[in-house]
Amino acid sequence: MAEKYTITNQSKKQLAINFVSTVALLAVLSLISSYFLNVVAVGIDRYSVSVGPFLEEAFKGGAIFLFSLMILLSYPRLKKTLNSKRYWLLLGALVGLGIALWEAFVQYSPGLHRVVPSLNHICWTAMVGGGIWLYMQAGHKWKLERLILPYMAAVISHIFWNYYVYLNERIGSQEPMFAGIAWVIILATLFAIWKTE
Image 1: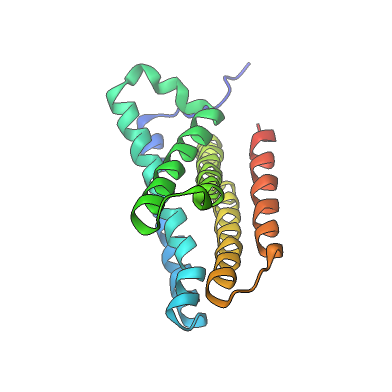
Image 2: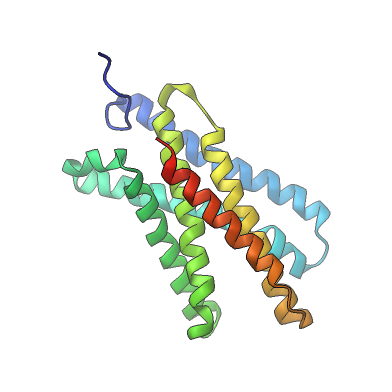
């Protein structure tokens, strides 16, 4: 009986290729989408609402990898945790929490009004972390859609949320549909990642 393919039984070369290719893919996705949306989006508000999520989610995916590498180098005995879906989702959530706290204390004033946006960041980055886990589990198969789909779901959900906030703060229009769509995408994606083997 063949041993189940996991992250930790990859060769060092294959693990390095997977890590580098994932970071490179996230960077390429953010650059391409940034260029495309820069042509489509006019004005600084629309730019930050539409393009920001592509760059931000790719940046957070890179941060997840950085923390994983630091953990792997600092605590080699924890290598088996890299096989865990929970590890990648939790690490993604922790990176998202860090971004949410930075936004709450640096960009905005902290308060109860930052609870839902903070929860959004936690979920979006957990989605990217889950996508990284799915991609890394594929190993030699190079199933890019396993990373791209959760990443794009996080980005699209983030864009819907940004439009909700933009309409609410800048125009004074209450459009809860955008917030609802963002949360439907979040819940559906996290459920799909959780049910994936």
